[in-house]
Amino acid sequence: MDPGVDSLTRSPSSANMPFFGILLCSVTLMQRCTLAVNSVSHSADIQCPNGCVCQLYHRINCANISLGDLPTQLPEVTTELQFTAGHLPIIPADSFLNLSHLMALHLSGNNIRQIKPGAFNGLSQLQYLHLNNNSIEALEIGVFREVTTVTYLHLENNLIANLMPGVFYSLERLNVLDLRNNRLTSLRDQTFKSVSALRHLFLSDNRIAAISPKAFRGSRELTQLYLEGNRLTAVPTDALRSLKRLRVLQLSNNVIPTLSSDTFGPRLRSLEEVYLDNTSLGDAASRAFSRLRGLKVLSMRGNRLVTLSFSNAFRSVKQFGLSGNAWRCDCGLTWLRDWLLKQNVTDQDEVRCSSPDAQSGKPLVNVQLEYLTCAPDNLKASATPSRTAKSYSPRPQSTVRPTPASTRGRLTPPRATTSENATPTNPDPCFSKRITEVVVSEITASSLLVNWKVLEDLGDEYELWYSTGAERQGLRVIGGVQEMELSELNTGAVYKICVVPQSSLIDKCTRPSDNQCTVAQTLGLRGNKEPVQSESRKGQYALGTGIAVVMILLIVGALIVVLKYRSNRAGFQRHYDEDASTYVEHFETDQNKMGFDQMNGAYENIIDEGDV
Image (cartoon, rainbow, N blue to C red; front, side, top):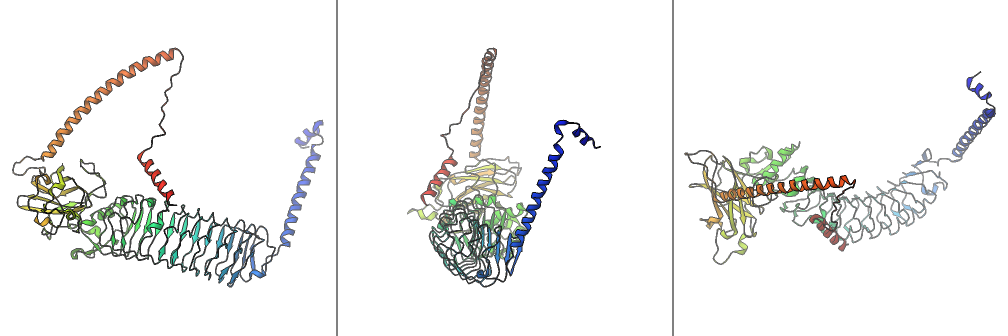
């Protein structure tokens, strides 16, 4: 006998246990058999409609059937329904009343021309609605009134020429709206009103030439906007102002010839990707991208760009698309050459020179740095320059200088300036009063780092003259910066360095004033002369020494105070320990204090709310 059974039979209190166990198993088995039979008979009762293919009665695909022939009683568990009949010209009201569990409805490629209001009544759980690849010409107000749960709406490849404001009013959960390849010509105010959850909006390949400033109001969660292949002639700056979370902006294949410093406003600081390919872009202002501090991708392929000024926004860029432009390889592109070399990108060769003739056709990265120069108009440029100025725009320096590291010097070709706008009756051609000091803050055997201070910021171009005896050379600096490194200089040579604001009178400037000039000598021996520093530099050293001495005295005094304080505090603590007491210090932060960034952000949010 089985030991378990024997033990049960020997226990009087469990004599009836086997009987109840057998009874319970029998009941459970009968229930499962009944459920199986009911399931089979239920499946047998539900017939898949003729011309349709059913998959476990959850997904139904009807290829050769009209809406009128669709049985009124489809399986309640149907979650996906697809019609590919090829000819459903009109979708009447109440066409899908008995499909309350439907989550996806595919009506693509059916030559639909009109959808009646109420057509989707009863679809209380619908999330995916595909109406693409039809012949829809207009969307009537109320057509989506009952499908408030839709998150993906596909209307691409239709004939829609106009969007009535409020047509998407009820789609409060809509995340993706695809309207590519239609016939839209404009976007009016409140077109996307109340579509508050919209994140991806596709408007590519339409005929849009105008976008109202309030077209996107109410779509504050929008992160990706695609407008390529339209008829825009400028970036719709006013319309984009409300899209503070926008990360991707696609504007390729429009006609946008210029970008101004106000094109991308401060509220677009979240932009990470901007695409302007094939837009006939020929002029991008030096501050066009300055507010886009999170920019990671900038593509401007196939345009008419000749040069591109460095912007602080480019420090975060990981991918440039710049091929197909007529690049002029001079000092204005030294920063780009450095960026391409540092990033070690695979498409370094895509930036090719169109001018000057000596560099035509060459990849920018293959042009030697000494040939990327911009000589002033009044100086004769050497065919093989022996002195160059390096651009340090893309990387900050840890040197002593009177200007921030974010304003680095770069060299560009001559262009019109604003210096002469304030020319007095008897002009000073050197504009000597605008330069208050010139300092050489770093000296090596072959380079000098020159800083200068300006009294007035009335222009953003300067000429830097440096000479040894009768030989004088010059470089042009733009961008409102006040720092430049002169490199590849003669060892142990004494240089006179002058800074002159660029103007139409600069040809007449023959003797800059003393405050515009300084004298410094590169390190090393030349004719047994000891290296000499400028008087301003000596003053800086004297001032620095004095400050250092004061700081050392302050630190020693602070240490003495701390030691005395700790000694007194130790005795105070021992007194509390002897009395078995506890001493706790609480440090709290004043919550009423706000940093500059917090106040600035709050101010911008107030402005944003005021524009709604």
